[in-house]
Length: 132
Length: 132
Length: 132
Length: 132
Image (tube, rainbow over all chains, first blue to last red; front, side, top):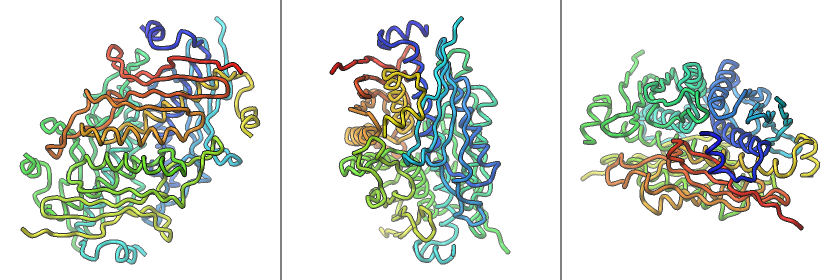
């Protein structure tokens, strides 16, 4: 069915490396926008629990082999000693690594806050073609 | 500071029961819209990990005593045997209970999908006034 | 039906002022978390179009009489002259006013970034009881 | 700077077609998860206002040439005659078309609910290489 679907909906002109790159982008875009706005504090239990929850969610999506979210503790504000002393997740704290596999192509991609760009960059670090 | 802030920004006409109800509404509205759209499957580990993650997040917000999310397993679709066989969270699966405390007022509130209304109702089940 | 529902699900102990405060909180919590993470630039057409879109969405919710979103132009970064020169919505730029009416109670509530609290405060500015 | 950044962060092994596919995926993933959960009714003004708002937002992102969102009116429930008679956006109603341009590569991509897959499919319909 999957092959069939690919032929019906996708351009016949797209190869499996390109398709793998497309699927990788979808997951990073989703991961990022799911995380944005979630309340967070500096409590390690809170942080790791949010990381694990959204990792699990993204793992449900097609072709995801592995996903590791690592919110930047150094940039999170708040200890909850005061009632307003907590933070919410923005691009500044989002760090993630995704491994995706589409057919014989494996992709390693990341989200990282790049200081010099003042921007949460999503990029593909490695494309591996598995031979059989 | 908190008292001060209350006087500056809030209507002087609002009592602590009303304020507690307002704060409860904020948390349920937030919880609901954070959950919407998160990918999910029927894998118990995935579900409970998402529940715990968002519970932790909501617990960071002011006046929250406790929050328990219980996504409705009977309405979630997908075992991830097929690549597209997973679901995403909508109001139909969201069940949550929140305990909030503002000064001497404790509120127990819920989100539940009400079949006859075809609607994810948010409601206050109990208001408790603690005497000192 | 509405009256019926109220009796079934809501505490019998909650009065209409408290209920109105609860409903107001729900809408502000929703509005805030829907806005968080949406990409934005300093282009006036972009900003006002996002404002109108989310105002329309929140207006669909029960008891909402009026909602006005006013994203803080002074705090939005980016002119899109460079490809990465745009921003995303966080609590720092969200300003909104909501008028909600539940039975004879009218509530005016706001979200504002409060510099001294370093916090996007949601508060009830006015409660009006309409006499008939 | 852009070229520089590409060399630093991206795999040297990725070509511009692959990069364009990746960037397209990011935008569709973002668009989808921003839309999910937004309240909506069958009021045409509400629908088109939400569509325009999120189109504007996605247009701010790098390399986006054009984006058209077309929420499926036939699947939206609710006229707001009753207070609970409104809907919220899920994958079932999301239809969108995106044109993205990265260097000489132009991509036309779509999100459509595919009945037979019971799935909101994101796919690349066309890849165009512009010659200079």
